[in-house]
Length: 431
Image (cartoon, rainbow, N blue to C red; front, side, top):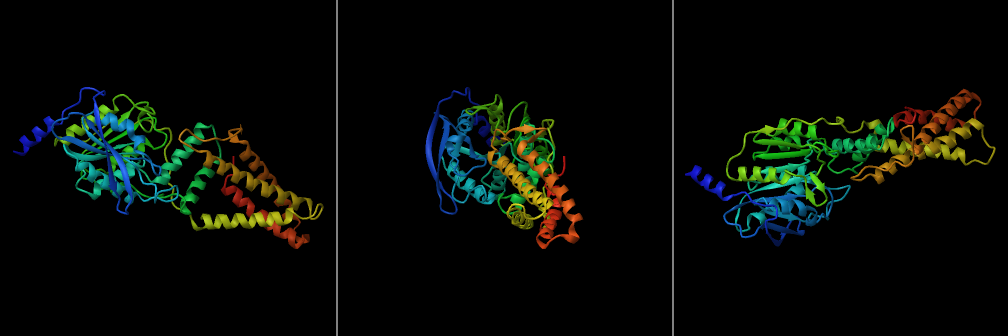
């Protein structure tokens, strides 16, 4: 009898005939565990008969994302014969410096409960893109109401490791070479250590290992935001049950051809797989071969105590105070070596900080703005490196005059001696 029932259900979950299939739309609301009332839109084929699979869409990163941002996916999947809920995303409790994947997973389950209560909805699952590839698996492990899981551009590594790979890709595409790349990685790690990078060290592997539902995981081979090959390897190594891995040649992170259109074959692949799984037939695990990934990601463990953000911030503050206290003396006061050290030390530190913060602030989905470049470096960074070299030479001169130096001269000399390892750490004295 169970086999007959499954066969009848599979037959009712029929394939649509056209992407132009008329759809009906229904607005709904749901309430999160902390009392936020959010909206959403349900799309389904008009005049559909029999139970249809339900699919809840889980947003990528960003607070307060609107259901409209998922309109292309919602329409394409509904035209594949599904009842699709595109929800709004919370803004309260979500920011660039704070978010909770567990809370977002609970939001998804609250929305899923609304979807499952709709008439004509059969087995229901989750679809998560990008950050949703961290969130949706958590939700799937928390509720038996999730029957299947689809991820697009789902990251298989920690958020910080993924973001560092993303950030250095942008520098590579901008033509940046040399020590600035490592300095930019260090800046991201310090931000994470300071609590400015939410969920930085969340490891998705244990969650993937607890999944008990069939999983369809998809990536574009040209994804430059999430490591496609490495993420697929993590999914294969950890998902214990039915796993289907698909790569789409030439496609980017979102599998969009443009803002409003999915790449050819994407919606069909989701529709075919969901209908199969919803019909009670979990497919055996299959995988496309991994694409060639332009660069491998690197592990980003927390900083050691001596390179932690309090030490770095405190050290920079003391260096600046020491340099400035000498540099602002009346004209002609002090020795020429001390004045050169003080001025070039301040300007080098300022140039490095401005370069790194400019890269961080101008970074977006299209890349990063470097400003004028010379020798594979932004000119501000190259200037900071030249100034650091001059400050190092001035420090050597100051050290040779230690015995006859004044107290203030000795203070700036000590600052110069500490500046040299600081400049080496940040790459200002490296190629």
